[in-house]
Length: 249
Image (cartoon, rainbow, N blue to C red):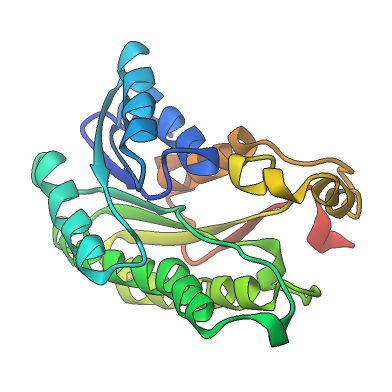
């Protein structure tokens, strides 16, 4: 089956760094017109410059995922820049604060659920119906391994991604019959700009899995890419762990 994405438009949130950026590079290399989204224009411009230099097609559309108006504008603008359609949506943007429950401020709870749950919900609501009308489309949500087991200090982050995991299955049931495949990728400890502050703790977390090492953004992006291509044409509502085997032990 083909992995050619020529003629398709892919919107990727959180695409100015880490997993989102690696995914943008891979989808562009397969021929997709990639809409790179994030807060930072300087980083966004750098991503699209790299894609264009490699012969790909990309544009940057800024968005703050914790702001409803910004998210709705992103969906509308992405369709416009994408030639009137968005065929692939990758909800990669997210925030992941860690800490004790009793020390979590209420505004942080609001932010985490706004970015990790509400923003993907609004984007799917805005873009999936049009995909369904065209009879095809692919959506991939990026969750986390700690949405499936308890870990000290990660309840807020894990619970937000657990909500996204359930939404993945619900959206697969809702839009799958019209040809829109909705799946999720669940990364384990991954070396990105966002996880740098974790330092040695990231390596210690990774050592609990069979792989015994931290993952790279490109490894997560490879799984996302598989799920949006025709190679995954019979896959709906799946949570694909890319965690070095952590959930196996």
